[in-house]
Length: 335
View 1: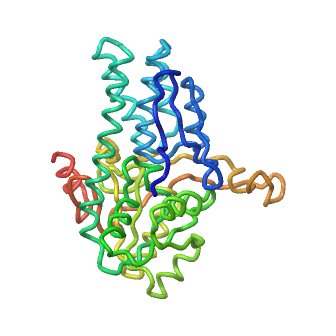
View 2 (view 1 turned 180 degrees about the vertical axis):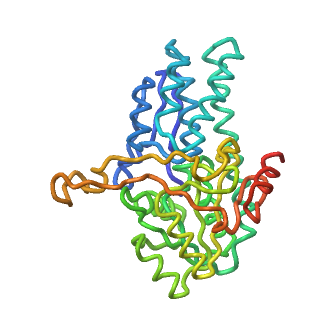
């Protein structure tokens, strides 16, 4: 059984309606964003997240502003800058904004473009699943990080879509799910989606991945991405770089799965990727309760950057890039 739709546009209100991911897995609650400031807040609070889904949310946010008769360019600017690392948010907003401008600045033109963006991401998900499945051996034990299913991408996801395809093909023996500290997108969201699809899975502390690999219980690591630079460097949820280093040490393939909308040829290398810094309270508190002494400082980057030499392959909706380098990325973006 699949999860409820993570996002929909209600033209009657009008509003962007989200499945509030901050309430999962204990409660499936919709959050109604009836204006762009409410949607920006929801994005910043991670009620909606995941690079491709952020792009879809941003696109529908432009459609919402148009439907309300708001200042659409100003709304687009607020949406595009709500979170800096996921390139899809800015590009999704730009795509729908351009369609709105070219279509006579009508709400209909914006909504048609937002619907098309959502459909394209769902189609991309199917392509990633198909190509990614070719890299999964029989009886695979896959380790994944953060959340890359329908709650993050559209369709059935990116990296999660590959695991799901492997499960349906009878190739997946077990899915290992990193908790993904500090906000637990793995244990809260990936385990939620895996359970709904009947995928055999276990949650582990992020710090246990090394021991798991050392014991020979991981055949493949697959993750998503929030931005892929022109040289193949990958920004993804913090902790991804650690997994890539561990995978290299233990000779485990490390595969990134992302749609071409996440590839940013305008960013030359990993050093040029902006990394969002989150509030210290996400680390010093848990569920609103302090777990560190008052005034304790925290280093809380939402993402880290994995260099391309640690990435075995990049799976996109049109094929697999291997080795991951500038030439390979340029070719897949021209396809």
